[in-house]
Image (cartoon, rainbow, N blue to C red; front, top):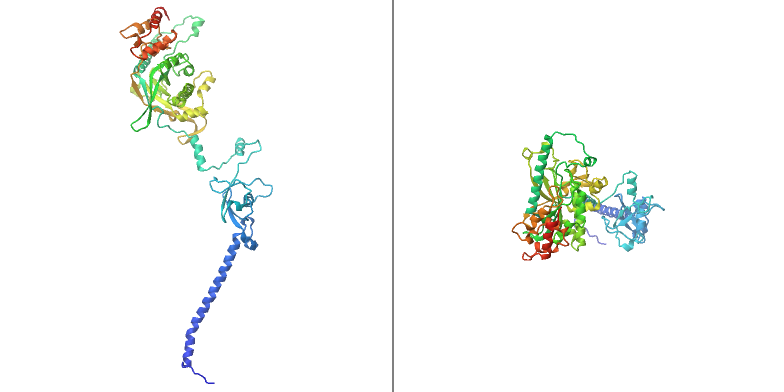
Length: 557
């Protein structure tokens, strides 16, 4: 057998083996490391697959999970206390069973909390006995639990929170931000930026005559007061009847009902505008009026009842659009009493308009209140707050307001205390409070005013100012208004109003006070109204002219 000798020398073989040995060792080490990583990753994957199906609520370990558990899934449950539980479920498990296992409920325990599919509790799971497979919940889906309101044992339908509050215990309620905002909005006092009535226009002649009357009354009262101080008091014998009479202690506050019309138009910006025009006013009987307060009962009765003034105003095409009151110098707009009276008259106006087939809410919302400052009435402002130039100043100013829609709604709902009913229960009809408290409106429950919780609200928050204009109305104002103690109508004044002067008789009849005076003495004033405010060429029927002439000659008051 022939041997073939290598052409490479032996020492070269040895040198080649020495060079290749490190490379062979490195390759072997790399192969061993790769197999080690593969085995380690396989163990981690198997461990993770087993851990997915572990019921953490039961405290089971990964080694306790059987191999068949790989067919189950996991649901996450957010409990009412904010914690989250992961629950292993089967396709046939019901939602009630899942929630019970998540909460750790035992047999015989109360019903589990309600389950929802969203964190805002807007998508409830109606059927708690439905299988998980029917709801289409995927592995890792989230359920949200909301604790149902528990009922107290005291009675059916009674809330446990209300029961705890009755017992004087703390009752914690969980509410979201939206619900809390709605609750605060319902009790938060909000200013009304714009009045329902864009502007008020008063008849120039009527308002000027009223201002002159207040000014003259103030001067007469001041002169009488000075004369009384200068006269020495003497003791005289009087009868029992005379002792019961009390002389008036100066001018009293006055009230009046305002009659007119309202007109709706558009402003330059395209917004709706409502202008209320007052053409006539009527002062009802005010026997209980004092220098500190007006007669509330007579005013409310006159506004609600079918008074002769209401009939005359209706014949002229007018309706009740507001009321007026006088007051002494004070440092607030409307008092709690003024707001209660305005709310009462607004409700009466709305009901009357609705009964007549008109828009009652609109008519009531347009009601205005005119506050007349009479310097002759007692002041409620302290002397140190009165400027030197205002002392002794005799002036009469007119200011118009409306109460906010919120104040009217709260008055109807009973949130604002009905100070009129409370005063009537005391037998006075007048809210007896100090000057500082007159601008505070009491409430029956706690409200939020200026960011504070309170039961006393500043009346300025319920008051909306209304601009005042003046216009020339269609009626005259020459006959003495009724129910004024200083001057009463008589035959002489009636004759001068009807037949003295160059004006036609028909033109002279266009006087609200005169028509009101004749309404009580003639069978009907409809023909008089038609001639007074209708066509100027229409003459009064001879029959009514004869009645007026006989009335002037025969009536005596």
